Image 1: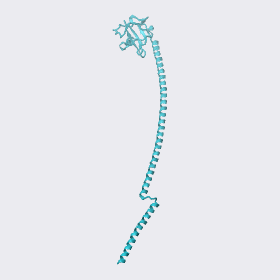
Image 2 (image 1 turned 120 degrees about the vertical axis):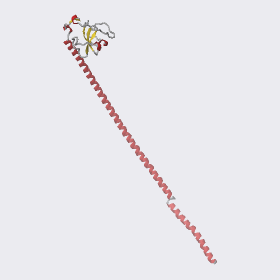
Image 3 (image 1 turned 30 degrees about the vertical axis):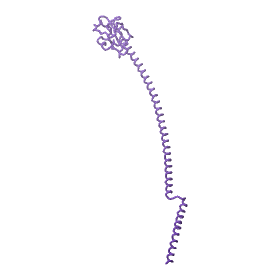
Image 4 (image 1 turned 120 degrees about the horizontal axis):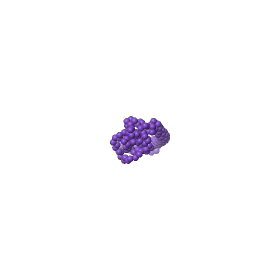
Length: 228
């Protein structure tokens, strides 16, 4: 029995001393794998890969941002060029429009000048035509500076205009506007007078009848003493 007990104790002691040695071998084997991997575990490798991915993402974002800024810079440049061209087109259009407007004004002034000349010639023609058609010296009712008494007319009541004064009006004078208003018009047919030229009217001034321009008051003819 003692021998058996001694043998079993010897086996137990041998097993106890053998287990740590196996554990040390495992440690050495694991430690050797760490050494071969640089002493880093799997989680550190994953962390470094994530860092690399982040670094790559940041670089990609920077590159995208640079490209976006470059495209935006090009777009601004193109927009400024387009705006400059639009301004130049507007400037050219304004210059052309002003030149055309000056030409149109010049033509309009020339046309107006021609129209005035034509109107002036027309007025002279009408006056000359009036003088040619009617001469008071050829009228047998006219005697010197007055109408013959047998051809004079009884004067209706005359309303003196504002500012009236007794005056002997003559051809070429200008009659005040208050003297040749519509209430003073004379019906030339009633007195068998020549038709007035366009723009002229026969008007009564006290005992006389005056042919006057309605626009300017210029006297074209005077028949003295038509009324008594």
